[in-house]
Image 1 (cartoon, rainbow, N blue to C red):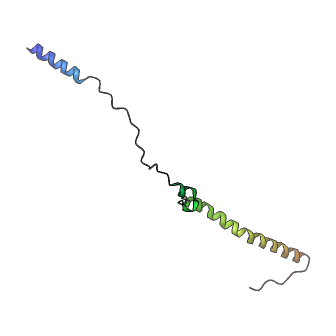
Image 2: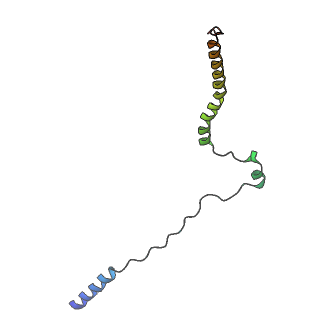
Image 3: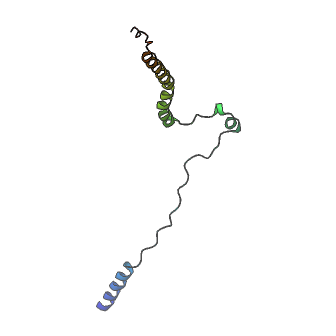
Length: 99
């Protein structure tokens, strides 16, 4: 009887140490975004479409626009300064502007 009991315990121990079952293969997640397209009337008319998210583009573009708007003034002031220097070197200096 002890042999039978020992044999049963060994069989139970060996079955408990068997290979684990393979897990279920991984499945792809279902897409969560809606796949509905806007109607043709909205799609073809740009004024009815939602404007694109351009916050980053606007932040990048602001300094460039500011520089472009100042460019004309800087060039004009440079030409004025060059004209003043030429006038002073030729002896035709005009009085300084009143401030």
